[in-house]
Length: 112
Image (cartoon, rainbow, N blue to C red; front, side):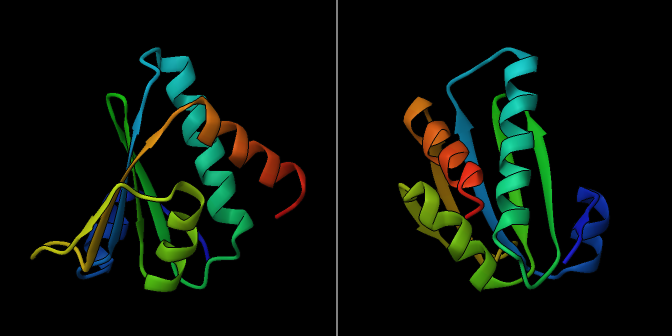
C-alpha cells in the first residue's frame, strides 16, 4: 500500500498503530538519512495497509493502518515498550542506534 502524508493519514485512519523511534543522531542530514532508511524498510515489508512517517527533532514516528504491518516493522527493532491509548490502537517505542541501523541496511541489501 502507499505511503501517505502524515496529516492525510491521521485524518483518514482512526486509531492507527504508532511506532516511535528515538535516534541517537542529532544532525538534520543524519536524521533525514535514517528516515529514508525507515521508509525503505516499510516499503520492503510489503505493507498491506497505508502508512505514514513524521519527524520531530531526533524522533521519527511511523504510523500503520494495519496491526500486522506495525508488528513486522517492530520485529526489526525489538521495541522497548508497547502500550495502548485513546489516540492509537498500539504504540511501540524503540531506539535506533548504530547496531539497529546496520541491521536494517543489511536487511535492505538482502532484499528482505
